[in-house]
Every structure is written in structure tokens, then in C-alpha cells.
Image 1: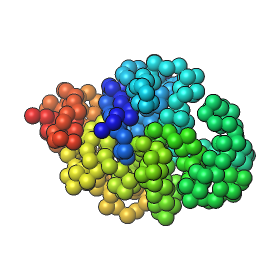
Image 2: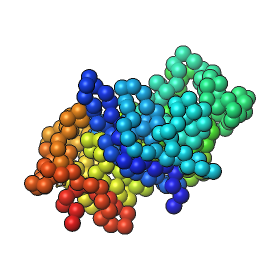
Image 3: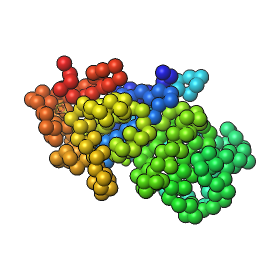
Image 4: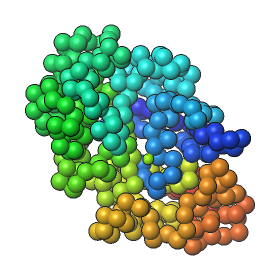
Length: 329
Ligand code: SF4
Ligand code: MG
């Protein structure tokens, strides 16, 4: 397929005192055109950091340490990690890549009518793409596309329900048909009915090629199962498994994925919120991660080598990769 974005051994750490919290620590990942990639893991596994690193939105204390982030912009491949923030703002964010955050309320300005919020965005980001009038017209169209009234752009965010607000944010994020849409837990604040609507909206935007690829970040496997074609499992700042969704649901390979998938069968929202309650122990402190496999402190299959060496992410099947010595023959 056509490569949309590629991360090559990317490391991004938070500076904390004189230590580093290794939130994204050697991540290699390709996203192709037409894909919906679900990134799953417990909170603190580095998923949200990864979403910011993908678009090189690096703000202190987060520090880009090493690696390459390459984005296909049609005529060219740009190495985002070499571009100054100003340039990213001008030609990448909003146009080539866009992020839908978890909290739609925070994404909008509570004190501003949505129309004025969009108009300010035009001035800050999209100026050279379309004039303000065209943006407002397109916003109305996109509001219709995501199933809310075009006249809602004349309302304040608080006048919309939570589900409508999240769809309004999706409409705004996709105004300029970004190639890559990154959604960071976009449904976790919503009830089940609105979750379904948001997932359906995203799927339609992709099917109509308003966006080319979606990266969907969540701690909820059930959601990934509904929307994603491929699943990426993160643990403690690293990718431990990459697999087509149906394969990993049927047969998770990494011991952590196995534990994670058990959370699908639980109906209690409280347990879902907390994530992986079936694996004893807690994720490691990323300022001082365990030597060897980072999961060895919780892994029921631990072997002596696991405490000494780091298992590399390796192909075990045509479309499956896993970082575990059980599969490293
Ligand atoms: Fe468990 Fe070892 Fe595999 Fe890590 S490498 S997941 S400790 S078996
Ligand atoms: Mg997060």
C-alpha cells in the first residue's frame, strides 16, 4: 500500500529533574493509506505521547530524542522531525494531519461561538488555504457530513450535547481533508450510543476519502475492534505487538496482549476505565524501566533471558509482529 506516515525508531522523553521519563522509547510503525490503526495500551503506556510525536507536536518537558517521522504529503515525503514548529503549524497541522482530542470541551473555546472559533483557526492556521467565507461554508458542509445541523456553528459549545460536541470537533479537525487523522480517546467520555455515532462518523469520513488514514488511540479494545483494521499494542513506551484486528482477537500472541484482550469481555464500565485489571501488578515507572523485557515484572511466562535482554519487535507471520522471546526463534 501507499505509505502515509512512518516512524523509525522514535524516542521522545519527558524531562523530569535530571531524569528522563521514557514515554516513547524506540517506536517503529508504518501507517498506510486506507487504514484505521488502533493503538491500545493502559494509561501511561505512551499512547497519547505517541499521538503528539506523530505530528511532531513536541512541547517541554517532552523532548524529541532520536528517530525519524516521515509524512507523505503527496508530491513529497517530509521529515517532520527536521521541521521547525512554525513550519509545521503553517503547512502540516490541520492540512496534512489533524488531532481529535479526548475532551471536545477543551478542544473548543467555551466562551466562543463555534463559528468564531473556526474563524480564529482560519486566521491562525488555514489562512493560505481558503478564505474565511469559504471556511465557514465548508464548516457547514462538514457539520452536515458528521450528522449535525450546519446552523450549530452559530451556537456555543455548551449548547451542544457531548456527542454532538465531539462530532463538531471531528468536523473542524477535518475541514481541510487532512491525510492523517489522529483520534486520542475520542469516545471515552461518551455513552455507548454516542460512541457508536462517533465511530460511524469516522468510518464514513475515511470511506469517502475525506481523510486517508486514521490512527485511533484508546484503552478500550472493544472500540478498536469496531473501527480498526490493524491493532498496535503498547506497553511501557514500546510496541509489543502489531497485528490485523481479527487475528489478534482470535489469538493474541504477546502475553500482555493476552491479558489486555480479557478486558473485552468485561461489561463493567469501571473496570474498563481502569484498563487491565487481569494482569497483576502495575506498569513500570518509565523514569527507571526494568532491564530486559519491560513486561517481565508482570509476565507469567518470564524466562531468564527476559531479565537480561530486550526482545526486539519481529515478524512472526506475514502481517504480524511481536516483541517477545517466546516467539523469537
Ligand atoms: Fe514475557 Fe519474556 Fe515475552 Fe517479556 S519476553 S513478554 S517477559 S516471555
Ligand atoms: Mg492518554
